Length: 297
Image (cartoon, rainbow, N blue to C red; front, side, top):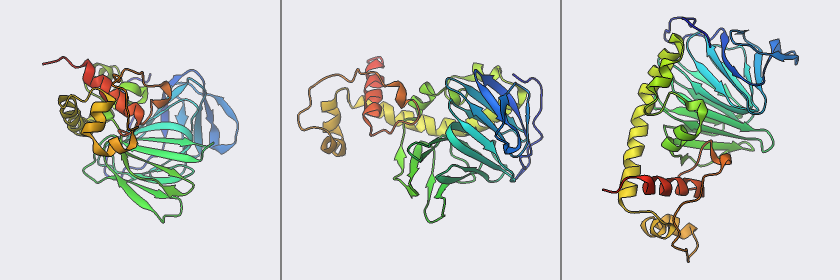
């Protein structure tokens, strides 16, 4: 981990000119100037435009850019730092972008989507086998929502905190909601942004603390709002699939007409640790388990 202060002072529309490798876990490699020659990365290595970072299985990397943006990449990820005032590229895998507010537009490109954020926290994933990109937003920036466009610019949608969308085959899907507290509990890349994680923030460098605290101030409100909704959901005694179908007519149309009165006790599979739609079975299971785990009043 880097110590001390490295990032430059933050000004409006601050350009991104370089980065340092802030953390590495297991297999992390660098490609200098897009030459296709990969070599092991170490904490403190400098990145300039046209450099790339690649992680292996069960590996992670964190990159701290000169103006304070923190990019956390998951396993099996190829992340590129292209030329441009505030630009990033995700070739495959997943990354969490934690961008300090008040710095102008930041652009993220995947093989399927163009993304513009205005100082916020967002999660981006690309699956090259399915040629599908997913974008989820964790915070609401006063500068406006995150916008996602297809590569031809024919479709553009906006996302706010707790929403995500997929882009596949050049088509932007429907905007859906995902469970923010489940995301913070399940996704290590989001460490420091959820409730009760102040001790984790204090272990970071001064630069990273400043970035996390600035963005966290915008993630807490949406998380609290969603928790209020979840508490109301639990108060309605929705603890079985049958109760849930009865209390949610639309969901009742999607579930079988005869549902055993079983408790929602199944474990959420590891494969659902990224963005789980509220209307998915995994989302329903999480909500049911959460309600059952609450102390009864």
